[in-house]
Image (cartoon, rainbow, N blue to C red; front, side):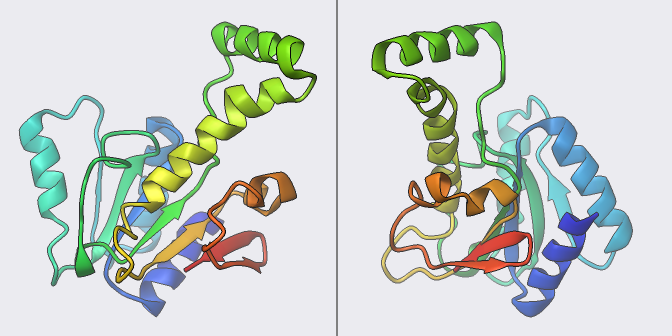
Length: 185
């Protein structure tokens, strides 16, 4: 799996605590299993479905200033926003998806109505793209909280290289194309 190789290479280059974000628990589990099998020397832990308060606290406690490892979580979930891991408690994140909302009848109706109101194409942007990018930026905010913070953000999905998506990312992110992935740090 190229994602496991990419994550291991970044971890080896700049060890520390990382968060890896995926679009669903199923995708998270597949990536976790693959990474853990290929790189058993790297400490890993993962978000579980319906974690209680104690389990969430234990998950966050693993991000100690002197520890290192990769935590796997769901983009848009409880570990993608509202947590503060200052300093070396979190040195980077991997985001393996644009975070687009699910394709379902409700979202498709919203898209259709947005297209009818604002013009064709705007429905997709307002229903899917903008909410997805908001999740990505929110997750990236776990790394960079103040002007003094530094970290590595690896955007894995090829769609991050599209001009319409690049134009939505914060202008201060330094985005570099690196093969089939983009790196902002």
